[in-house]
Amino acid sequence: MRIRFIFYSLFLIPFIVNAQQNKNQSSKIEVKDAWIRVSAQGSNTALFFEVVNNSDKPDTLLAAESNLAEVVEVHETFKRENDMMGMRKVNFVVIPPKSTVKFKPRDLHVMLIKLKSDLKVGDKSEVTLVFKNAGKLKAEAAVRDMQMMMNR
Amino acid sequence: MQKVLINCFLILALLPGCGNDFPVIENLGGSNYQLTNQNEKEVLFPDFVKGKTVIAGYIFTNCPDICPLTTNNMRLIQERLEKEEVDNVQFVSISFDPGNDTPGVLKKFAEIRNLDLNNWTFLTGDKPVVDKLMKHVGVVAVPGDSTVFPSGKVSYYYIHTDRIQLIDSEGRIRKNYPGSSINIDEIINDIKSL
Ligand SMILES: [Cu+2]
Image 1 (cartoon, protein in one colour):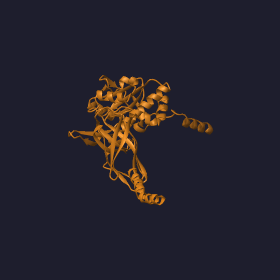
Image 2 (spheres, helix red, strand yellow):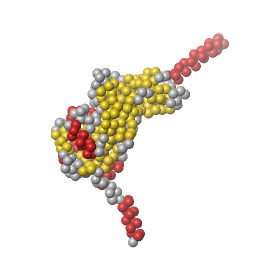
Image 3 (cartoon, rainbow over the protein chains, first blue to last red):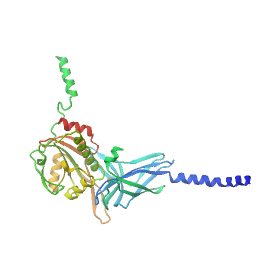
Image 4 (cartoon, rainbow over the protein chains, first blue to last red):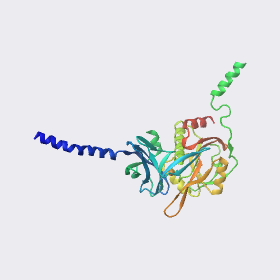
C-alpha cells in the first residue's frame, strides 16, 4: 500500500512542478497601482501605473484598452528648452527584464482621449494593457485627485 | 571699515527679499485684455485684479498631464496661503486654447476638481486677444502631436511653456516658475516678501 502511494506520488511530481511553472509564467508581468486622474466628460485624462517584469526576458507594452474614452493611446510627456513641455504618442514601451517601469505624471502615461463620462474621485474602472509576450493583462484603476497622491 | 562692508554683504546675502530678487520681467499694468471668466462674465485683465498679488497659471484643458499638475500646484499654494492667513492674493488660470476652452469647459474643469473659486478665476477669450496676451506674458503654445478621431476630427496637443507667474498688485510680472514642478515653499516665501 505504502509503496503504491509512493509510486503514484512520484508519478504526480511532474504535474505539480508544471503547475508551479505555469503560475510563474502568468505572474511574470505585473501591473500595479493603476490610477486615473479626475477629469470631465468630453475632456482628456491620463492613466498611470507600474509595470513589474519579474522574468529574465524583456516584454513590450504595445497598447492599452479602456471603454472610458473614445481613443486610448500610449503617450509620453517631454521637456524642451525654456520650460516648454509637450506630449507625443509612443508606439511601444520596452519593459526590461527584472525591472519596473513607472508610468507617472510628467512622464509616460496612457492617454484617455475624449472621455465618455465624468470621472470623479472614487470611481473605478477596468483597463487592459496589451503586452507582446504576456498578452492582455487587466487591472482595476481608481480615479484619484493629485492631492491624494501627494499625501500618500 | 572693510570689516563693516563684509558684514553688510553677509547680511544682504542672508536676507531674503534684499537686493533685486524680483526684477520687473514685464509690465501688464495699463494693458487691458478683454477676457471672459468661467461664468461668462467679461473682465479686463489685469485691471480686475489690480491691488492684489496675482498667481497666474497658463493652461489648456485638453492637456492630460502638465496643466492639471500646474492647476493642482495652484490649489496647493491657495491652501497654504489660507492656512498661513495670507490674504489679498488672487489666482488666475488663463487658457491659451480658446477654441476649445469655452467658459463652460473651464467651469467644468474647475468643478470636477472641487476648486475653491472664491479667489480664483478661469479666463478665456477671443483668439487674437489671447494670442496677444500670451506674447506679452512670454508664454509660447504651438500645436504639436495630434489625435485623429474615428469621425475624422483632429485634436491638437500644444507644446507649451509650463508656467506659473507671480504678478504684483500693479500688474507687473515679477517671477516665473515651472508650473507643473514649482517649489511650493519658494513661491509662498516670495509672495510674503514681495
Ligand atoms: Cu498624453
